[in-house]
Length: 338
Image 1 (tube, rainbow, N blue to C red):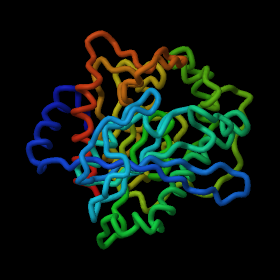
Image 2 (image 1 turned 90 degrees about the vertical axis):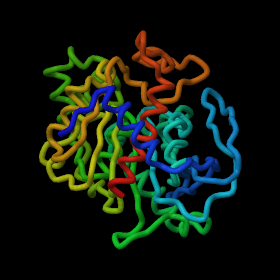
Image 3 (image 1 turned 135 degrees about the vertical axis):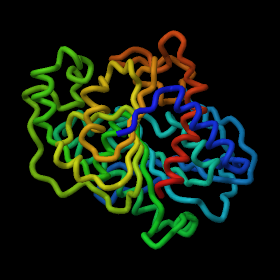
Image 4 (image 1 turned 60 degrees about the vertical axis):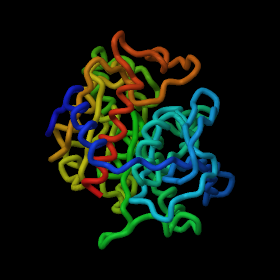
């Protein structure tokens, strides 16, 4: 387990930027993937990709991607990165990170999770016991669609192992990508955690999304959530208390984990640090003076949550500068491991 604090991350980012060629422009496109089940919602996917078309600001509600709408894609991407947002989030909420990856040669597919996004919380409201099982499957279905898509399938680089695919996720999305790597959830673990340690992890344990209340049923036995096509994982402030230690110990793909030291929503010692302790070879990067939403773009309007405004940061924390460093560092991790 490797722990990097802020200064180490700055040095790494500087080395990465010095070693890379001039970054490409970024194209942006939206894709709708129909559901296989009757009456199920389609999956909206924001695609960020290398493009020769000049980028510009694209205001879209509280978030503003900087990219060329329907820009001409380069003939080949270095790989495919799936991006999973957090609880009731948006496919646009991590545009700075997606753009950094696209500018360095990756096709980034940021999905709007059906039933768990800013417009629709039906997955959690109607079937909370299935929430943690459905989210990873939604990502796998997007992988299926892009590997078969006539415009994109031949632009994703291949090697002897197949398509070069990585995943990146924040909060519930961090849980999602760890499940795709082989982590197995057990909702009873969160029940026990919140009975025994809930006073030290109060926001997580008060959220219905966690499955923490003792009355929440444990889901029945499920098919594996692991997707063998995923070859590298970056989890940002992940929900981690749900995973069995035994399943984490068996994860074989490279994993990098980031967490804000001052995260109050998912207290690191119960979540990010727990995953890192149990996952052999995981890199753990602890970011000083950072709250839970440090990994998201700063929205142009207040968005209130149980942990306050998404746009807020602790005094002295420069989110824009941090994200500018983090993007190249994540790109370097995928370059090394895909």
